[in-house]
Length: 220
Ligand SMILES: [Zn+2]
Image (cartoon, rainbow, N blue to C red):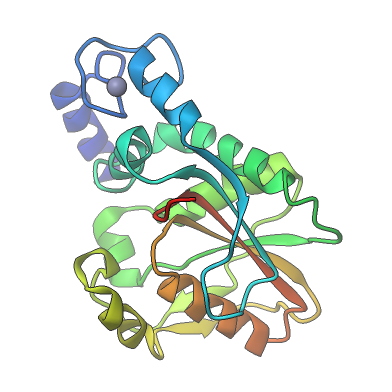
């Protein structure tokens, strides 16, 4: 299914010809982005930043502020299945995380996707990013969480509903006892999903949880 989808996408969006940030057909010399998007993205570098409110995270890092080319990259990865964007995105995330200089971190855990949605999409974008960032940080990726309830897409809900939507949605699926974990997702908006995941990890005995996302939907 995924291969068919990728072949179709290749026809609709010839990858070498369309900028993944803005959709411009001017093409791109490197990094999947046109020159304008590359410059714009560089200006939106975030690095270590505040974790979402809720107190579950020891620290957080984000590669970029959301919007513009960062939004384009996320949408192309997530909804159009351009999984070849993941290595570059993961590399940026690893660089952002190195800015924290944490001690003793020992694994990376992706925000889980419900198996129904996983079947439909064919891949968990957060898991792809976790593997890429983890490889660059020299850390193993563990699927320590699972989505036990197929929640409505957070992106479609108003802020106040997001936390409610996540209640009881995440469960522990692996051993994280005594571990210092980096939780990985594509975008952090209100932090409702991330906080629910951190809560499950800490409930399972994780010693500390950091958050690492490709983008943060908050300004400085
Ligand atoms: Zn562009």
